[in-house]
Length: 307
Image 1 (cartoon, rainbow, N blue to C red):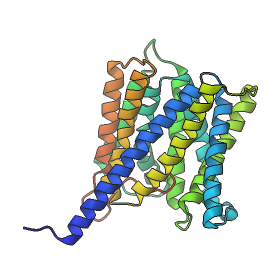
Image 2 (cartoon, rainbow, N blue to C red):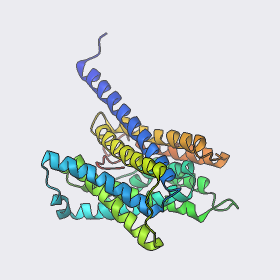
Image 3 (spheres, rainbow, N blue to C red):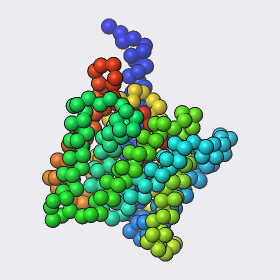
Image 4 (tube, one colour):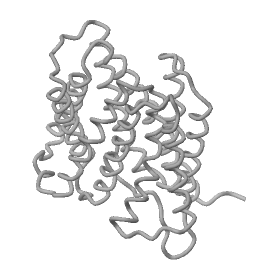
């Protein structure tokens, strides 16, 4: 029996969205690894600043090419909140990348959908079933399993990734309330502008001395910018193609890419607690994304401009 055109169209759109999401997560992971590599010979604040500057220039050129206004987003209070959360998320996440293992930082970031649903319940009064509340708690427990605060191996630097996670969750929640008229290029420009601010704050705090990057650092920095822009555009295409509930779970492919890069490039050891915590986080996140039965479904909020 032949499938209806609508089903075939939806299947094709979902497959396209999944491919775009996987591409986005792969390039985000490459961005993280290249940032960590550039940070070996340059101060973190300087790398963050230059990365944000490069990405902002790319999206500014895109806005000029499309003849779109740039300052229109400043008129939205929600965009101001989004910028603040973006600064916090990027600043602490990049510091975590520079100072802690790539694999652990990537794994902790996977709890973002869990925290977003928690925030949606608190700030947007979305109804969440008891089972999903349990999944939220379970996901946060998974983060604790990775951090292992009661062990001798615990490092307070691991909390940098947790603060970054909270900032990203706040950004996603603010993105949900942002005007839908704002294009990918506007959101991208202001997202990278926030990274510039984050880099400036880190540089001032640490008293960073400007260092001219050598050949390897320059290549790593250029690669970071290129991968960041590609990942952002791919993510936008993913979120606007197919069903969100089908496409979004493939965000977790970032964990696989991050672990592989951390293991093969930076020789990071992967402990049993890391694997257990990652499994708990991913399982709880996937459960939360399952459509609820009943008149008030709860799903991971559809956002635009998430990085």
